[in-house]
Amino acid sequence: MSDEIRTAKRKIREGEVVSDKMMKTIVVKVTRTTVHPTYKKVMTKANKYKVHDEKNEAKIGDKVRIVETRPISKDKRWRLLEVLK
Image 1 (cartoon, rainbow, N blue to C red):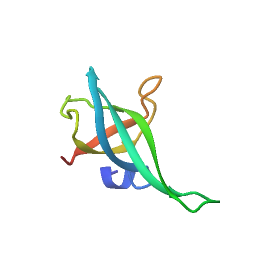
Image 2 (cartoon, rainbow, N blue to C red):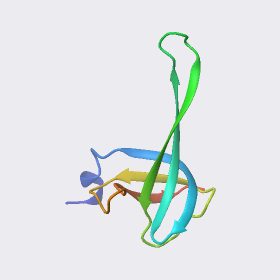
Image 3 (cartoon, one colour):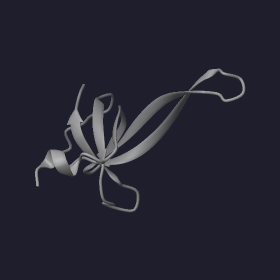
Image 4 (cartoon, rainbow, N blue to C red):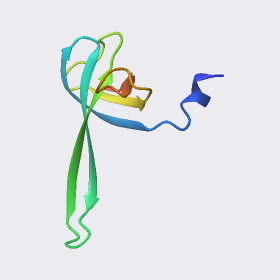
């Protein structure tokens, strides 16, 4: 089974690295915009994900693409797909 077929149904997100102090782990902040249901104001919401980075290649400030995966630890459910910079 090729890698493209296995990742076809997995969620993919793009965000910015905000921390790389852990070994083989980075923290990625993913922002999205939504419209408030009552006031119709555009809001920015953000989520932080702990991401598995096997080679420690991402640094703070990098733009990265992450993909959903099986649980790796208590908090890590994402892994690094590529560094976009």
